[in-house]
Structures are given as C-alpha cells and as structure tokens.
Length: 309
Image (cartoon, rainbow, N blue to C red; front, side, top):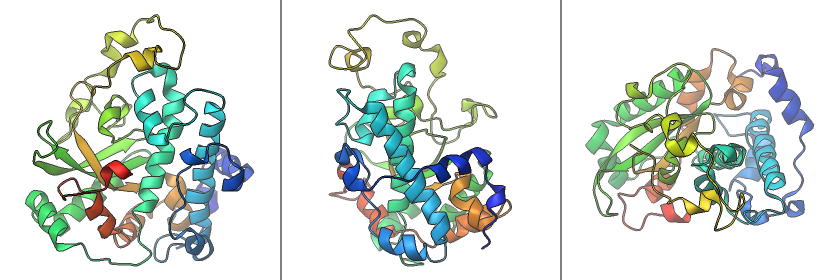
C-alpha cells in the first residue's frame, strides 16, 4: 500500500490537519463520546495489520472521530439534549429537517464507531457455526455474502457505509426475518427508528424505487409535516416539535438491525490504496471482520447485545 496523500480532497485534509482532538478527559459530555477502540493503542502505533497504516488509522479514527465528537459537543453545549448519547440524538433528530446538523454529526460519529468496533486485531477470524448457518439461510454460501457486500460497496458512487442487517417481517421481537445488504450514503443511518434519514441511495443518481430488498422512505419531501411550520414550544424539551411527534418509523421503513458495516468514505482508504484501490481495501477489510462481535449483535441469537450498543 502506498500513501498518496495528493489524492485527498484538499478541504478535508486541511480540516483534519488543523484539528487536534483534545484528550478525552478534557472533553465535556464524556458519556456521549464513543469509547475508544479496544485496540486503539496498538492500532495508533502499528496501524491495522493488513488493512490500514498508522497514518490512515490516525486520519480515519483519531482525527475524524475526534472532529465529529468535538463538533457534536459544541453544538449541544448548554442544550437540554447535551446528555443524550449519539444513538439517542440520531433518533431524536431524524424527523426534523431543522435538526439536520445534529443528526449528521451524531450519525457520522455512531456509524464510524460501529465500523471500527467491527474490526478484529487478527486476520481471517472464523465465523461462529451458528451464525454461519443463519447467514446461509439467506445467502446460500459465504462467498455469495462476501461478493454481494463487497460489490455493493465498490459500486457506491459516493461516500457512506454498507451494512449487513437483519430484517424482521413482523413487529414482535421473536418474529423471524432475513439478512439483507443495506447501503447508506453520507450520514444516513441504518437504525430502524431513524429511517426518515436512512438515505439508502444516492439521491443525485438513483431513484428510491430501484432498491431491492430494503424499502426506502416514501419520498420524505412529500411528508406534510415538513411542508409547513408547526407551532411548538421551543426547539427542545417535552413540548418541542420533535418531542411531540410519535417515534414511529418512516413510511415504508424496514425493521432492520445492523450487525456489521464497511466504511466507504475516501478518507479511510484513499491514503493507503490510491484512487484505483477501493476493492483491494474492501477485500482486506473482509479478512479483518470480528465475527464474534457480529454474532453477539445478531438478533437471531438469543440474548444478543444490540440494545447495549
């Protein structure tokens, strides 16, 4: 892998280069700061063996994540929602166009954190047999799963994430479902309660009707509550517009649970792999998946840890 930093967008490089995250103990609202990666000390000095150099890891995690959290902390300083965790902020802001800046920083931080926590310090980690059997009920072979996920990520014409999600067909938590591959662009969220801003397609290039397997929100721009000003008591608190609206899912929103994702933002892979190296990056990422964590997050597994994340 080479380090052709000239391939980066100049604005992004300047922004991240200027940003030196303050030590965690100096930041306010520590409870909202995503926890450090369990292998952070090792990755920051050695990089992620076979995936990212120390410089690329510093860019993709230390600087980028620090920048997202710092902006989120500044944005919420002194507000009633300052104590909310990023996941709570995502759901809270998902339905309000005026809260897009809150949503974007919270979702960007949460997505990036989810991506890095799914990376193992070891290569070619075996997938637990129970999870393998469950995945094969949808994809028929592990190679099919890999090919579908990686080609979807490689084909994304724009930055975002590609998720492995479990989709239920009913409302009950015991209802069986199936596995799907879900792309989200920019700061789009895979969380079921945030499907107003799932952004499963690049809206400048594609139609939501072209999606296969996952249903997109039904043209959010046509929602009447977004076409007129609603009287409310303030921007925050129990009587605000956001709080008064029921937290139901977007029209057509799928009940999905994310268990794994790959980050396709250029600042993650471009430094090490160059403009033609996206698929090489994706192939290397596949070899670093922490399948034990994927199994722990799987809703098809009794006692899964999804609600704890």
